[in-house]
Length: 424
Image (cartoon, rainbow, N blue to C red; front, top):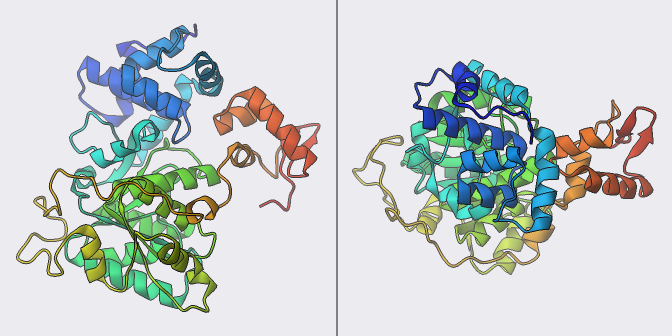
């Protein structure tokens, strides 16, 4: 058993920077959610199962007390505690909440009426919470909505198509969701803003700062008029693992995903795979047959029968089940009574997989990715520190470090493990 304080007083002290007027049970709940968010990496299904079954407060109490989780096998329970316990830090939680308060970031949990329930379709892989800058009420107005994603190194063609689709859709009241990155993401966000529409940026790092830094002004603009959100705590750095896990959130949050431009192994195909697995509508924009930047979208159209060929905003409306004239005489882009394509229903076609594209779209999202993410080219780190940063058990990390050393991917020195200087 640890000395971690689970009292109402400790919860209120940690949450004090947010300035919330909470009842005791709500203070305990929000504090527990913030702690769990600190303990786990995105998509941790073991944590998702125990929190869904017991609630965050009781689940945290059992973890701190060392009581077994009936929801997990003995092996799962042991492995999970090895991942979570090194991150159990009252100071880390307090630091996160102080950063959130200073940057105007709000903590949104499943208890809040604005929680976007479509995220719960991710089951045990659903986020613990959302850290949100901007209009939290807009989270409840994302059905229907469209994810517009694609290459960071977008061509002029891809940039133009993304802007035209986003501007027309957002201008007619359909929210645009993307990842805030360079290329297609940025083009879609800017076009939605120019049309006075609602746009949402889901980040792989903390919501308090822009990534990439070159999009600071854009992200601030989105936060001022729409939503900037993340599932990882404020102060968290974006990593390859978190980017790929963030893609499942983009797919789950929206009614349809449209891939505008993507190479053969683009990370955007990872988002498309999540959308297909969730039964969301999926579209892809064709490009020149000679362009490597459109090889991925052609792959979706050719190999995946449910990926519609998108050539206009009307095609996207059809994906959403809306008429081409929607919303005739309807509300403005951010009206509180925004029309839904199918109120209360989130079941699209039966879940399908994207053959080859989803699996080969991006670098492998296995545990070696998480270990590399936790290493630096500049400073050495011991295995315990790497495990804490990766959210993994230290014995697993030691084994993987050994394998990575054999293949020359990592180095070991007097100060610990590090990446070769050319890695990044």
